Image (cartoon, helix red, strand yellow):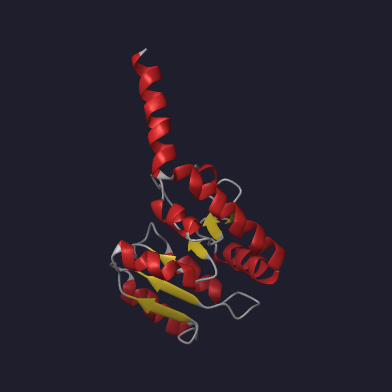
Length: 171
């Protein structure tokens, strides 16, 4: 699944076009709204993927969180600057392995809990999806790593780190 704004920087088109290149019959659910929604839906039809790609409306965070456990993986397609990518941690907290655009900083956010691909490259993403889809051991390892990594960002750990930084800064 993919969730986010449907604009050029989020590069959801990479996921749509990658699906046409996969060797396995993956499906994709795209949750979000944005200026490229109609274009993405049209491209899915052009590629003959209307039965494999499902577009859903933007939804409140609580509703998205309730849906996350129903998916097998999260696809992060941003191709440009990304300040943090909170949705990555949200997906990890729900046990989803992440296939991500290898942008600077994203690996540090994810820890060892993701499978990278070349930003904006549908062939690279298709390969990463097929690798994840075809390797149950990898999926299990990434799921476990996702849950472990998400704990680094819980409110208690974040508050403790903020307090430590504050104390260092004022001393």
